[in-house]
Image: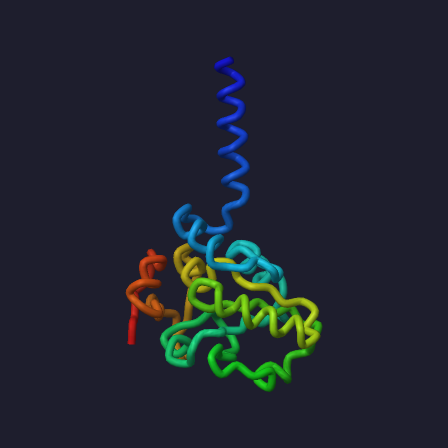
Length: 170
């Protein structure tokens, strides 16, 4: 009986770990409740591996311009969210690997959906977005292309999910 209980507990632990796409359990729970998960998603590790292996991958930043200017993933293209228009990506071939991100993944999930509806064939949402990217120690760059620790934390409410880096709110 003791072995059966141990087996069940271990199985539950393994399955819950496998389903977790970010390092923090609380962050993962919040994201699961907030995101629709109806578009392709990549973890930070998957996106980083793709970026290392494929120089043709394009990260698009769906945050507001002031957030992007504080820091962004290297060579990311700013496309915005509130005023997003397909014209901002018209020079990107529809078959190019595109990884969309924002602060936590909700805005980028919406833009990913719009790109897929517009005919882009290889678009994914970065699960946990730039907050998880930084939380996992991946680099971000300022508007001059210099590596920085600063990350726009959107608001004090959302900024609690950013565990590393220097939070900027303006």
